[in-house]
Each structure stands twice: as C-alpha cells, then as structure tokens.
Length: 236
Image (cartoon, rainbow, N blue to C red; front, side, top):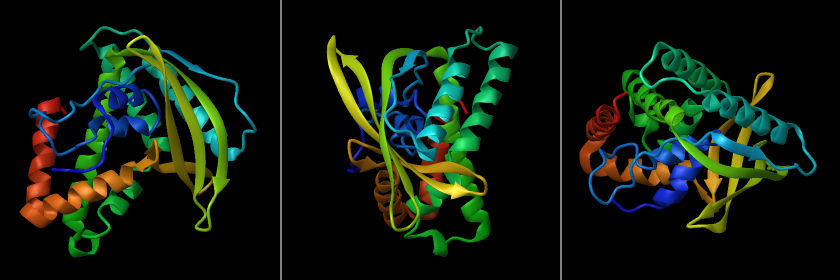
C-alpha cells in the first residue's frame, strides 16, 4: 500500500500533541507487519510551549487542548493500575472534547460514505475513534522532549481556521523542526479540530488515499477487518 505518511520518528514525536497522535497510527489498518511504522507512544513529560506570536481564538483553542492533555500525560502512575485507567479515561475525554474524529473520518471516507448504510458508518467511526484514542492511552508510558511554537492562524473561504505551529526537538542529537498545522471549525460555542497537516501533508488526505485503495480492492468489509486486526494488535 503506497500513500504519503510521516516517518516513524516523526510519528513518534507527533504523538504528544493534540490531534497529531492520530498520525502515530499512520496506518490504522495495519497490524504491525514488517515495513509498516508501528503505532507510536505519546510523549508528554518535558513538553514546553514557547512564547506565542499574536494569538487568536484558534491558537488559544489548540494551546489549551495541548496543555490540558500534556498535563494529564505528565502524571506518573503505575502501569496497569486503577490510577492509570482513571487517568486514561480523563485523557480520552479531553481528546474527544477537542478532536472531532467523526468529522475527520467522514471526510476521509468521502468517496465511499454515501454508499454505506447507517450501521456501517457507525461501525467505521467507532473503530477509528478507538484506534486514535488508544494511542493517547499508550502515551501515558512515554517521554520525549520538544517545544511548541505557535506561529499564526488564518481563516479560509469555507470558515476553516488553520493554526500553524512548529515543533522543535532533536533527532540524533541535532536540532529538528517539524511544521504542524491544525485545521479547526466552529462547533457550537467552541472550536474543534478535524485535520492536521504535518510538513504540508494532511491526515485526512493520507487516510482518504489509504481507505479508498482498501475499499476498492477488498470492499468495506475488508477495511473493517484490517482495522479490527490493528485494534487487536494494539490491545484496544
């Protein structure tokens, strides 16, 4: 399967930021076979926010969500303990509050969405939510150092608000910068994210290419089977 996706290192790093943990499961249909980047843990401890430029409502929404989830992930709890389960539930709630996984999934499946019945649509979205949210839970046991620069925001003709950021970290001891853009839209009285672009490549775009190829080859049932296999492999 060929599609544009982040490297394993980038996927690992991005797992610590709101929405970008989705990138850490770059292929939500793989079961960890050779050649497929593994689902990466989510870094938390050591994360810092650099001084922001002119911050609008979108920047504030992204920053608040990042800080909330990073704060939860920094808490030290014993693996497999009740405290870890309780903390994981809080992380999941925070992710759902900011990240509109249903909107992300519908846009990624736009070429096939109208062909699915309600039961199929619900099944697909449920699996996608579980795969993405599970990545945050596994992030409770990870750690990476990085710094976030919030560099600006703009609104397009469709009302989408894009918040641009730069992630400053190190790779093999050398400075490494990754551009991450969050795409948000108004949902009631708050802003929620439905896509992220890493170095110009969007998550929805990646997923759409991948999902379309699987559905064309194996049908919708084949896509669900691959997602369930991934779910089983990650212990969801």
